[in-house]
Image 1: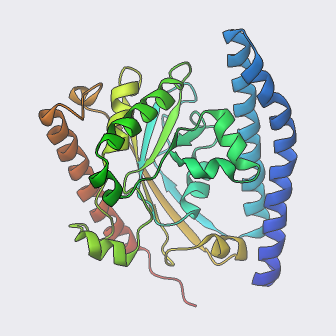
Image 2 (image 1 turned 180 degrees about the vertical axis):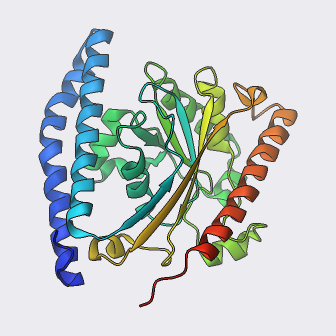
Length: 303
């Protein structure tokens, strides 16, 4: 292990290893991805997609190996029993940091179908990874402000149709959709501006979740309710690379999605909107209480 190295040196080394791991797996990925797009046979495209998913899982294995090599993180994970690689899952998680994505991949890689999530359309231009997300079928969406939507209400329908088309492409094989229901990372100023009724969470946003339930409701039946807690404080990616994250706590609940919420019409059915709001509101209250208990039970490590 290289966790004995000073923080700055460890951060540089970890960053270089992450980059080298990404470059290594992107080479075969970018060779195979055009074949998937150009193949006229659905069976060939499906086979190539499975191959690309395998490369993504191997990339994640490499990143996890870098973490083990350069970090001393104590992982406290509960709730992984009964998960299947051939299942359909919707992950609903709280969102505090970009580190959350690394945590989710660390926890679920090779246990369930490789998680995909909604991505801002501008991120397709991120070097190396943007093309990977696009070829794997991640749903790309425009991020519009509330002010813009107020001036252009027709954009809501455009966004909904775009989400529907992106999700329809995932129907061919078991998939996992990751949704950070808060829509953005938790920050105290955002919490105060929203006047959130929760102590540790922002108000959940239901539009993306509703699109998933409407499009994939015939296949999705399980919500993985994921709660992520950093006992030593909300971290940054630099904290992760520098070894300043000592502990990560993850609690997972496998919950059946109520039948009345599968395939509902969020835009036009007020009863469905109310039922979805009530269900997520109850889950969010339970998650908020769980975060409070976990933070109280696990004391902050001394500096």
